[in-house]
Image (tube, rainbow, N blue to C red; front, side, top):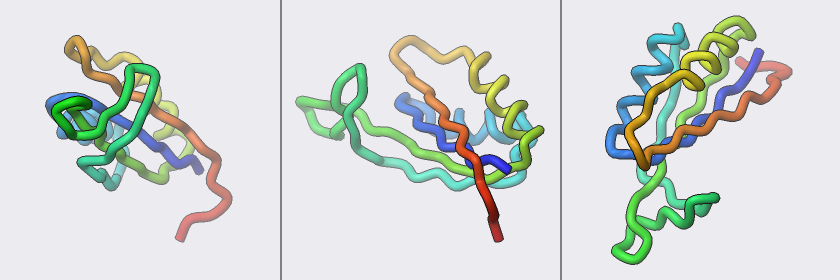
Length: 94
C-alpha cells in the first residue's frame, strides 16, 4: 500500500479531486487553505504573498498509486499552477 500526498497551488482545487477520481483512487481527503513556502516562494494568503495550497492525501494499493502518479505527471496545468505528489510506503491502514 501507498500513501499519496499531493500539494496543489492554483485557482481550481477541484482539479486534484478530478485527477484522483480519473485515476481510480477510491477515496481521498483534501484540506484547502494551507500555507507554506516552496521553490516558487511563500503562499501565505496575504497581499504580499498571495495564494494558498490545497493538500490532498489518500491510502491506495500499489497499482492505483502507479496510475495516480502517471495521471498527475501528465496533467496539463495552466501557467502558474503547481501540483506535487509524494508516494510513501504504508505498513498498515485500518
